[in-house]
Length: 291
Length: 158
Image: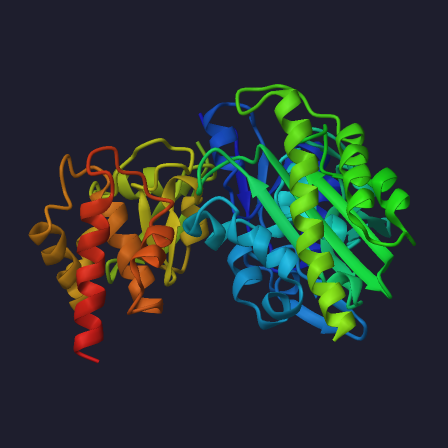
């Protein structure tokens, strides 16, 4: 016998009402790339499936004053094809292009990637270096949380049972427009990341004015490497500095060994990915400056 | 058992029936006679269950049947209604891009949907486009050859 129910609300407020009533018995669905395999494996039982794919309010990519707004229903392919993200926020499109495969990218959403809270959530990594703000609502409250404070552990976030993500926002700043993302997986497509690193950098007169570093699959959650960031801030860029920063990155990540890679390899590769991303950004920034 | 009303079109034919809340579009289609949609891994990895849902190629095993309500679905059988579908069918045969044939429905659907958006891709772009569809027989070369031949034909007739 089916223990599941299905509801397809038309507005965000309807969803919030249902969440308030059903609490942990509710399961919001959109892209379903995680939910359906979980139902099949009986990891999800007896739930009210709230299908939010018909809610227009939760879709779209907009410029809002000095910010970029992403609806939680934005699909991974929309990040690749949107003029707004593909032109100026390459760190996002680079991650989107390496996400699963082109078919999954047609339906998988940003909101789904974040709430699933996998340590290997590929879209979380560039959003961390963009210092994204997560807008959360319930019938009782509205709040905003920095993405770096959103994840609690593998599969766990700060979201309460009656809350949902209604938007993701980041600033249209210079540092956000200069980012780079690299992923290491076992294959070119459909690969769960072994490690990912994103860096956003703003250089002024050869000094690091702003830097944000994030890494995936190397800790219980997607993480910002704030230790390495503060070490680099306001320093003049040279080879010695980069070598020291690589060590900091390797010290700061907390990887585990699993079927995809060992702890040692992940630690090693995190430093290397940081170096590649940083050099890419630093070289072009310095070049721009001297010209 | 609670079932929900669903209206959709499959290969241009209107269907009005019911579906379970947690039923995948794959199971739903096969239950309703569209057994040309193949069931492989059932976790969104192999791509043989790919269908076109409102003009986008999606893996039907990770789509809820009820998410296709009031929408348009095309399976590989419906592809022969399109010139591009027929060209791909012929090209797959010409190039021997079929061995066991299990991945073929998904490959044809993905190729058709991709060529609709990008009619003249190069080989690398084709490889990327079919990267969500697994084939365990051909090593992909013949499949890429078959799709590329249609792209070359598109270029010529431009």
